[in-house]
Image (cartoon, rainbow over all chains, first blue to last red; front, side, top):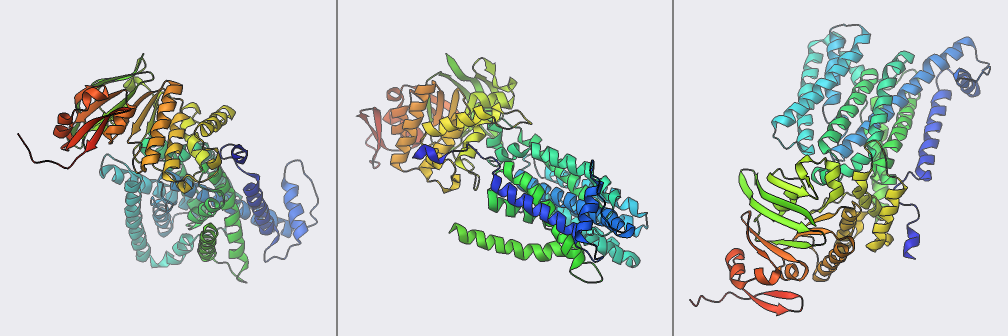
Length: 347
Length: 261
């Protein structure tokens, strides 16, 4: 009897969770494509999208204007939501693994605060819109470098806790400066606010092209470290006796996740909650192994943000909600529900 | 053949000397037990021998100096069971044992069929198959310690370092764990170095004992030679009688008597 209960060997991706996440992702993508205020024929929208894929040529039957709405507005916006969501969720799962702290997320190392400051400076200085992204990017990198330097000052033993504390301090400091800069420039305050709250509304193929290489690179490196993150879960000293170099894994994963986060924040503004909520839901469903957690978080994050964006642009007639508001407003109660349900099920 | 040895090993931790000129050499298939009072440097010795604690002096594994070896190579030779292993929340037993295969999996790669087969074999040897897909956090203390041993075993190392492997176990489970180490040592000709608090267990399972006090080796040899009541009184500050038992000396704590000399 005893041998029969161990049929599959150690953790592999099981078909069940993949199927569920895959279906949700496809569903989210389709819904983003066909729903919108313009009242475009759903089948037409799908045909128009398929028509742009390589080797496929179908007549969508849409007017030129409707076709442009689908291909120039909806598809890039959906794609960008997917890229941003996947990157933030993957980075969150990676931070949580490398710091062995379930509360770690892209905001913890001060990346978001630094990016926010960078973007604010660009906006209040009335620099061209195109410069917001690089400024946010530099701000995020400066913040994470400061957090690292601070942790190094704190002592030779660079534990995960030291880094997180440094990150929190850096985030508070950068947020304070950001608020100060923002208050000093009352004329641009609205613009800064709308960026801080997160937005995908102005997204086009340009943003997708800007983010795509960073997103793909981030996903690849993080996925390649999924085993190492499992090894790191026994702590750095034991991980070292198992044959890995914890410092090297940590710095590689942190820098990768930070680059991905900065790139995402630069094009979409500050969208909170994705990096913490998605990996947690995935973890509750499939357990803590990063070999399942990271790929499913990427897919789940993409689906989550597509759906959040769908809500943001359809829930209020005649205007859009900032997507950051939606992720927090929908995400927090949903998360609470999942937590409560899972703790019931375990009893 | 000598599997692991150290010469003039010294180390300091936070400014305190924790190891002072320690010499030790352990053969294939030999089990050396390190005993000593609290804070005598036993854990530091285990950590220094695995490269976790930077130390002066030479540690040799097989025919190579530890300091010249890469982490992966050390991990393929030396398996460590720490006193309080970090047990990852929710990780399954089979995933946990699979961690021991890390030195054999390429940096960018993932485990192959050979690794899975080895893990299944180890789980079978340690009677852990029924727990394979259960979270390790749901196991009892004795089962958990078997899983930690399983992780060490799947490293296919020739040296096994155990730091107080019986901590927090009841008497029966202490015995089971030590018997298991004894069998594994025999089967795989492992060189075993373990620390143990219980001197009677140390005598029953160790081929040799070394007594560590303030980082120095103050006595070493066969259990019957080392476990003298006077030595125990001096270094452990304990009143004992040493009886003869079926598996070697039995160290019996007694109420301290007023001094008669």
